[in-house]
Image (cartoon, rainbow, N blue to C red):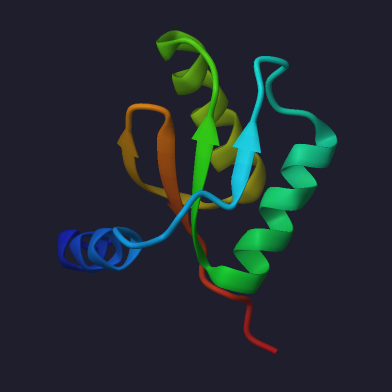
Length: 88
């Protein structure tokens, strides 16, 4: 992903609200399924991770690996992910 594209996506994501909220329990299969659905539908999403800093980093890595999404931005408890819609 080019820096210009990443910057453009950050700009688009600025006005978005988080579509997925996670709790202290972490990432479950159901949460990952919801993230997959949101990425398929929207491409660009925000997720609020309610956990300590180290746990958030670990959760972000797991989410990106499992969903094959690109991390666009991480500020505090909110991460922004992007994954292109599959071609039909």
